[in-house]
Image 1: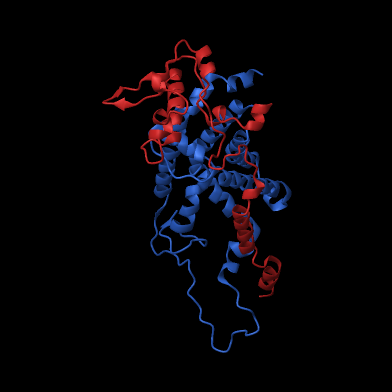
Image 2: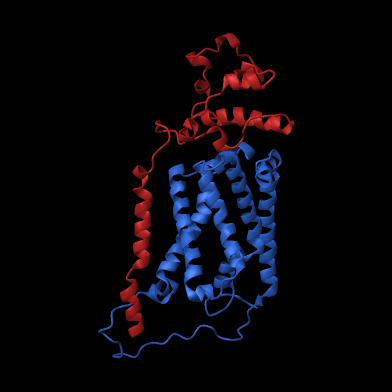
Length: 231
Length: 142
């Protein structure tokens, strides 16, 4: 009960609504810049030390198997290897970004605070996005628990990160429907959202930058394009 | 080659299928959703200024604290003109969609602005977050 009293207290209400928002955004932006600069300082421009892309072979004439069907290129990518996982993941990540940014309530409060706001989706649309997001999140959780090869590399840390990511959406959804006590839920929503923003640069959520760095900048066997840097 | 054939058989065009299903889900879902209020253009139940509540909880609240017609930075509105159905003094007569502050913004700024200001002055005050005013009707009935 003590904790519930603290959560619904005016102090936390004012903190979560005011300074913590700006602090968490500051941590997100400065932390992301810091870690990105670090990534570049850990790597150097690649000299032509080792060729990573194999020279393209041309099939000799008459050697093609006419009976084999034409296999589309994406079948060789991760889309072909793990179609369900990659579809769910894509939907999850798209909603993770666009739903909060174009949420009506967020933009109205932004307008109140700084007199400027972005366009927003109707609340019905973001409502459904959130449901889809939560289903995708559940999929990831069940996958982590029930698929042996994923379970083998999962630790408590992974479950904590899962909670940090899903919590703002779950509490946002519950407070939109005003389930349980609204004030408690909206404060939890603000705090969990701020936690996610602040945690992003310093946890594995930083894959939001590292993914692109690893795929487009670093030279590895997974590089898309040529890549320019190496460890 | 054999392995690739197997992949094709088992997965089909699953990513494409999934995208189509999700897209269909977004665009056809409107009738699954039950709105709380009857009005179609409002996304949440509208909120009325509670005269009695403000009167009993505040020392002094004046009609002209909020209602205004500004001329040269001064509120020149005559309080006697404030009557229900008086088109000229209704908020929406100035604050329409073409105004710099539309009806919703004007209303939001009056309520939240005042609540926020009093909060900063450490006075007891009203709510500032969406669901504290826009209470779902089901919840209100309870």
